[in-house]
Figure 1 (tube, rainbow, N blue to C red):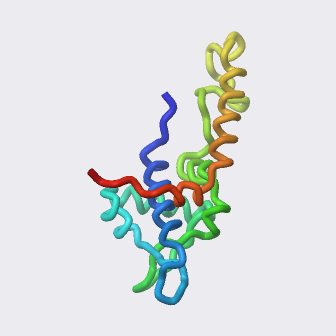
Figure 2: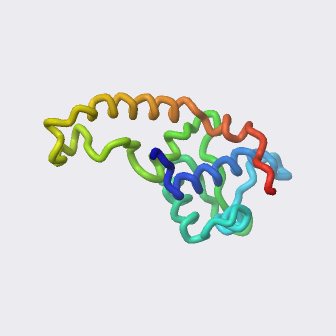
Length: 146
């Protein structure tokens, strides 16, 4: 089963929120949100979210501001951030199989008959995630709590 990690889920949730709040400050500047605010709003463990947000800062997807009005804002427009950028920033390279070109330690590496087709599938998944932008996620109406 292909599945995003909780860290990637949390990163996407936080970035989508920041993208929808962009430019909503009273002075027209992007509104910053703290890790605590985001964690409370979405019921995410604050310590884990803070680590995720710091990874996004290191990857150049977020900017953090200190101080009374501090918090996190997008480092660039949501249209310039892909879902793949977010996932890679948080979890590292996208993979489908345990083996790769660089790691040929699998006992089945030389005999494997699905490795190459699975690598092509991974390339298609990466292409889809790269073409999907944060702006698209932010444009979808938010899910209603039931």
